Amino acid sequence: MNEKRIDSLISLCLRAGLLQAGEEKCEKALRSGDAKLVVISRDASENTKKKFINKAFFYKTPAVIYGTKDRLGALSGRGNSASLCVTDKNLGARIKDAIEITPLESPGGI
Image 1: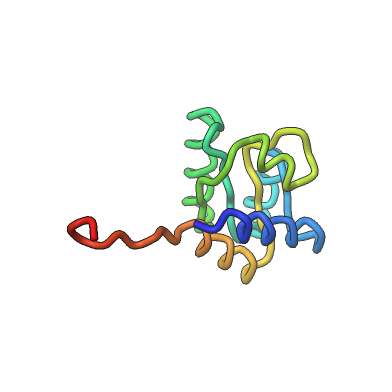
Image 2: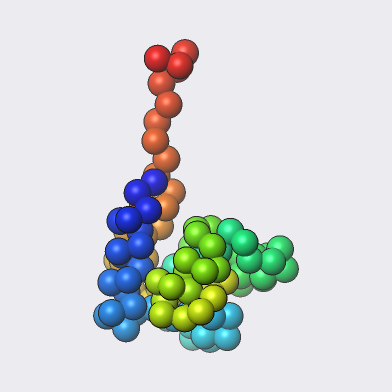
């Protein structure tokens, strides 16, 4: 996973006005259908993770786990943020793909 690429895509969303940060704004974006991707921090409480994963599933929106609350907060221009919502379909897909890519390991440890 290329963290610099992911961070730059999230920052691009912020500059373009295509990012919602915080629980209330993310919930509103999900309910209105504006959210195209939900990003949840690794260190969010289990209750918060469960809530956003369930809401994302209900509203048929992809959700990924990435970064910490401090990191997501810094990327969104806030202090701490357990969740972010990307409101652009293409940028959301690019961020999701970048987060989900894992390096291939060769069989046999070669």
